[in-house]
Length: 127
Image (tube, rainbow, N blue to C red; front, side, top):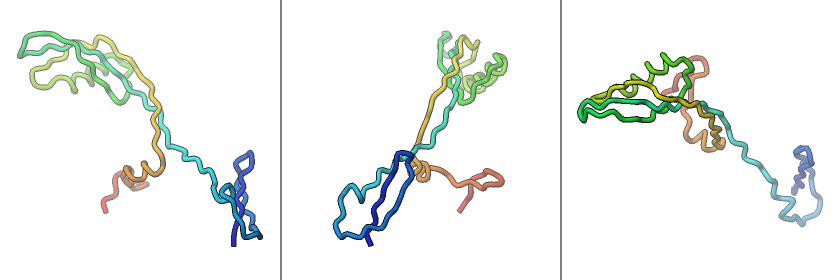
């Protein structure tokens, strides 16, 4: 049996049996749009004045934090945990900017790269 697939202006799909044996390309092809999963993520980029104990020179570095922190004292503590390693010591956070970015991924890519989670605990399922 051959079917005619039609899509109206409101994107409703209609499937109608076709009685003739000829079928055109337009009747077979249905334009399926691939809607991506989208998320708006906010990150905070902080410009920090640091001191290198080995070279005894100050310098500016940029640190990106995945979650914005509005309180300056909490921001400085969070940046210090990331920066204070080895010979580098945080002196102060000079400037910070919160950036908004829209990310998207197709359903096929999401399913290929995602980890399955337990719905109750939200922890990865080990198989």
